[in-house]
Image 1 (tube, helix red, strand yellow):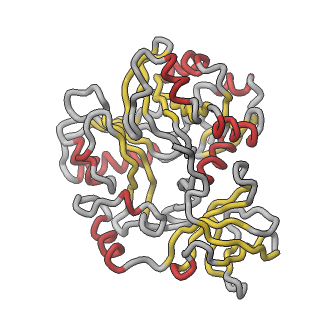
Image 2 (cartoon, rainbow, N blue to C red):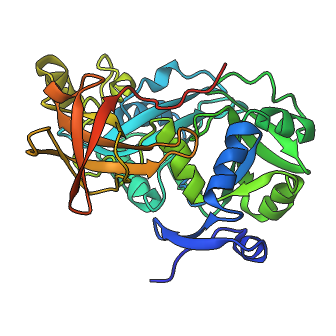
Length: 366
């Protein structure tokens, strides 16, 4: 099957980007280089094309109930212009995907946009429509992935840069809130959200206006998926398909360290299973670790205790450009989760010393 392409594929190619397949999309992995792009976001600003992310729009009289019953967080808490991070779970509490839910700021009745991860939009559209019909709810579900591009402008200077070109004030947006405003003559949804550990905004842009809006930020460092991964890992943020996967790495939110997204006083798919997990506790949890020996942890490498007994598997790992050390994430038994606990990571057949570390590894100055 041919890879899907973002609306800026030709512009990225002309800019000298290197590409990779991700979630069924042909996406830029780097422009100037991962380290340079990473540093730009940590010190000033960078712009990412994240049009591979899905966009599903839910409206109608029962839109709130449908969203409430299919996500773990409390959708009823969202006022117009609010957003929240949430999980989508199976009946057994295993995470199918994580998502950000936006309530549109300018609709008379509640209308929601939620953002599945790359390649999940068709699955999530079917999940929403199937449950809507099963529960006999009055809601309209539109897959808008081919209608919208999505950009992320991230870094200490990001909000100011976007504020300068937006028709409405962007600087006063609070975290996890959104506003509709014109940028380069295009009506965009601007949200103070991101996936880098830095301040910044994400822009939902009409597909046909993608080039015009992107070129408005031509002085900002373009960034690819490579630096997006190193940035999110330093911030301790999870990657769908690696740090959890319903078949390959079946985990619930409490194991994955995102139990704060679970509101057990609401009714949603997986609620009863997660209530039992909350009461009984978990056997394993996701931890961060930093290697103290030379070597880089990679997805799939074994984690052992100091007796070289395998106790877990690395789910994500990289050499941290900011910290200058190799870091990673992985699930281990709860008795190995205290910060400072000694571990070993098997890197190309050699055991490397590491220690559990609290995540995020990096936290920006407020």
